[in-house]
Image 1 (cartoon, rainbow, N blue to C red):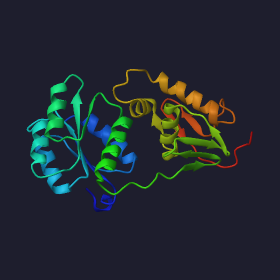
Image 2: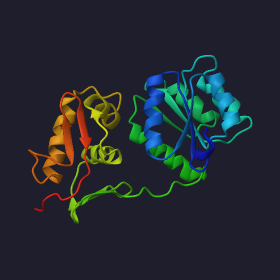
Image 3: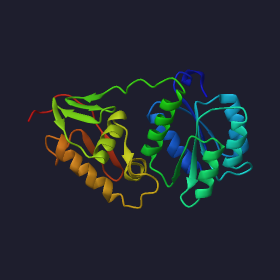
Image 4: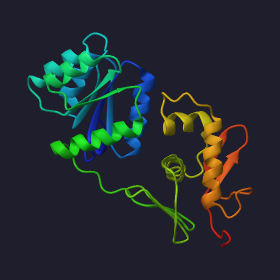
Length: 241
């Protein structure tokens, strides 16, 4: 890991599926974690020894050395917290992993937000890493979002958002002017295991606009990029209701 990342909790993500590795890495980095990755059991043992992570997310089904054996070898000399990823129908793997000293497990397919919450809970219990500072509120021209308390205000008035609406707005506000495709939003808000269509994104954006835009038909915060997706545009001088 980079030296500048050492102040943040350090997580080693181990999975042989690059798609899952990138999904987990993205969501952890968005929450302020420093992330290293490995794609097989042998590499996981090497990275654990060299990087000294505060927590390891460890898939059971790994090439070269499987996750169960990685867990066993780590527990011979380390108490680093381990969260195991297991297939939904592999109960025996979960039992063996916990008996070997894993701290928790998440079954695939999983919600990225649940995974992050489990990691935070383990680090609180074990005291691993340096606690992350409270996330700073996101503000833009009368609109304010508080990540820690899941609250949103528009010109000082609270806005009642659903969980998905809140996550969409938080992602867009964190990256002003960046264009997100519908597929990206669907995967990162609903999870890679969600089988709905991108129309789901459009419907949630429409409802979100109804709650935060002066004119939902001509939105100023959340703008459509035709043929691509959506972006959040910060600005000044929006009209008052």
